[in-house]
Amino acid sequence: MRNLFVNQMVKSYKILLVTFFSALYLSSCSPRIQSIDGLLDGVKVSPEVLTLHRDSLRFTISGAIPIKFLNKDARILLYPEYVYGDNALRLGEIIPFDGVFNQTFTEAQFSNNYLIPFLPGMEKGELQVKPVYQLKNKLFTGTPKVIGVGVNTAPLLTRMGQVRSDQPIPEIGVYLTTDFSGINSTENRSYEVEFLLGRDRLSTNQLPTALQNLLQRGERGKTLKSIRIIGLHSPEVEDTRDHNLAEKRAQSLRLRVENLGRNYPIETNFRKNDWFDFRLLLSEYQGIDDKLKERYFDVLTSSDSYESKLNSLKRLPQYAKVSRDLFPKLRAAKVSITLANNEFSNPEIAASVFKLLTEGSAMEGFSQEHLIYAGEKAVRLNEKELIYKKLIELYPSVLAYNNLGVVYINQAQREINQQKRRELVNAAIRVFRQANGIQNTPQVFHNLGRAYILNQNFFEAYIAISQASGMSGSVDREFIRMNEALRGALDIVNGDYRLALIRFEQAPENEENLFNKGLAYFLVSDYANAVLAFEESTQMNRSSGYGFYGLAMVAAVNGDRESVYTYISRAVQTNEFLKSLAPTDMVFYRFFEDNLFLKAIRGES
Image (cartoon, rainbow, N blue to C red; front, side, top):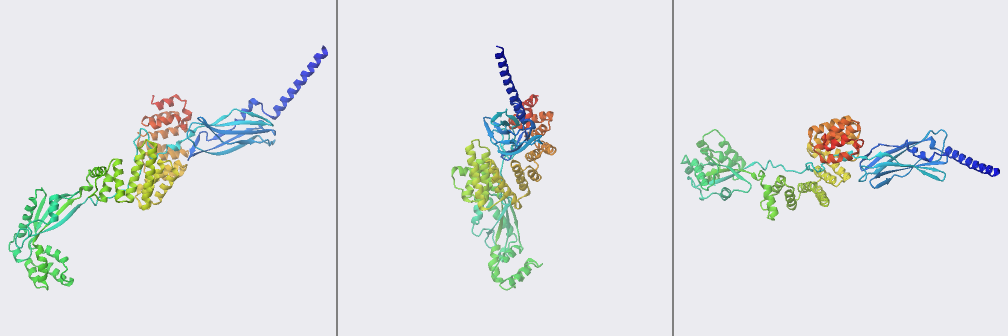
């Protein structure tokens, strides 16, 4: 019995020794399984909140594996992945240690750079790293560690005319316009009414046809403003016998005009014993040569009396011919009519043209200028569309194609149906290209860039906007500044924040551009200048909320909680888009569980 007990004790002792030495061996060559998670204590990502850069995310995973995990028989593997929603994007494998042990090691350091696409839904996700410890042929898997939270999508706040639910829909694009100032000016027309020799009766007993029609029917698009009648007489004996004949002729013609039944404003005057009208006729007369004509003018411009000049003329060669050809034209009265071209100052013209187009009526009497004017004055986009389509049909031009394209992109701004929206944008791109097919212009390239922005094609948009900038020598300064502002906004989207800041130095200082400028400063971590730009933005327009939102972002990264509450409250008061964005915007991720932050968003005091 005693021997049996001893044998059992020896056997138990051997088992104990084996277990002890096995444990001792494992402790000398590998960590205990329950401490594998310590592998990740020194692993981190920079930046902690991933930042959207163009259409991708750039970050660095780095760290150091402590020496206690390093062994010549060990291999350490890390598996990073970005988890968002029900999706996970695996980022390959990191091998910070592969069994090559050096006694001088204090830790195994590593640093890996990543560039991954930004996909929908990534805003609220987690960057995790899963550790795997391989000891000879055994694998030990640790618990994944979250090293990064979400994506900072601040660049998507860049404002380029986007439509927001409770904000006014911005007008985008640049119409080509025509200067109608010259067309708006008054127009003078002159007529001559012939009288019988020595009498104040009309030679044909009726007015000249053109004058008669104008006085009776008027002219489309024009208003008769005034009539001036000047009675004349010729140097012939019969016409000079009655000293008041010129005045009588003016009054006779006035009565004839008044008898037409129109209440025209009429002014009468007369010229007698005056060679002014004869000099006008002589200057255009081709019946004598220039040398002889000069002799006639020498007489007419002398200081002699009317009668003396007549006697001198009679002594000149070919007087009989000259008097026979020209004197009868002075048995007359001159009529000068002033017309106002009110067709280009009439607010009803656009409605009239639109009505004719919708009825399918002919556009007889409407010129290219009429249609251009109607398109400019039309208020509704559907009216402009129909007018510019007709303009393209009748008078295709850069202006017609460009302006129709601007109508399309503004209609797309207002379209909820995504398929119709795409169709409108694509139609705009087509007509902008047709405009450039006639002649390249900076305005058309700018508008083409706007259309590409609506299609989220920022690469092509940037090319078009840059082409517009390259042609800036032919446009006014305000267009250049406006184009540079949009170019700067695209720079932010493309991740060129410092280049954007250069553009904004030339941009008009309005609320939108100042916000974008502040955003560019924010993205390069120049928070002092970001604050200045955001504050200027709020001074331009406090109701948009964007400037206050920018100030809240700066306060968040600076850890200024009270300012975050104040500014975010002001930002969301008038802007539903920002109100819906703030609770998920990773700029504020440290405040997601903060009741005061949540109350500020809800508008609670």
